[in-house]
Length: 258
Image 1: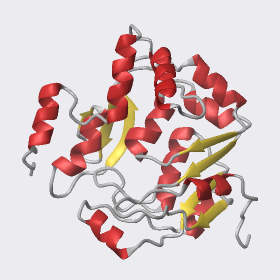
Image 2 (image 1 turned 180 degrees about the horizontal axis):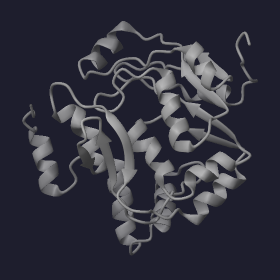
Image 3 (image 1 turned 135 degrees about the vertical axis):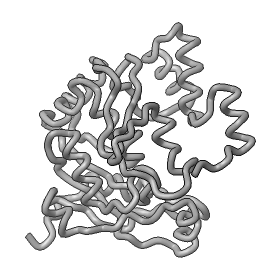
Image 4 (image 1 turned 90 degrees about the vertical axis):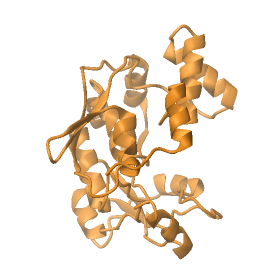
């Protein structure tokens, strides 16, 4: 059963920007100013926002993300995949796999950065619409896999309806390994503690804490860092604490009792 779209959603559709984040809209506008050059648009965005580091796209080509569901249905379009959990009530068929509608060449600058990296951090973010699509671009998964960098996966704090309902940490890791074509070197996972008032707020959106099944995760990746990574103070949002994450990225190996 489909829910009626809100007035804001209708306005967004009329403007042609429904489902897009503000960041994507800014990049799109800057790309238009730069005559379609995405790299120049990203450089302008970094200057505009005074960001640290450098942002590189995995591809400079256009491609459409598609998802095949367990019931055989195929959904195309990142926004359609991303928002179906909000727009459709009732049970949803799980995502079986995601793929791009055409072969998509990678950005040379991005591949070069991956090859030269000391650490490659994957996540956190929406698994099927933000993380895995990067690994679908030609040569990207291979570049990450063969890189001499330490590969670290930061698992999400919450599940997402329509994408990762019922997922445990090990389920996220298995999907990363499947699309990467190899395993990561370290997994960083939250210990599962949350303020009750936040859990209720997220439960209303059918989002729940990702269950930590540490033994199962260690069967996949021996080095697992578990801690309370929840940022405080946060009245309404569940977010990772950046300082604790940085500490976990550079922490000594933790192989548990093995």
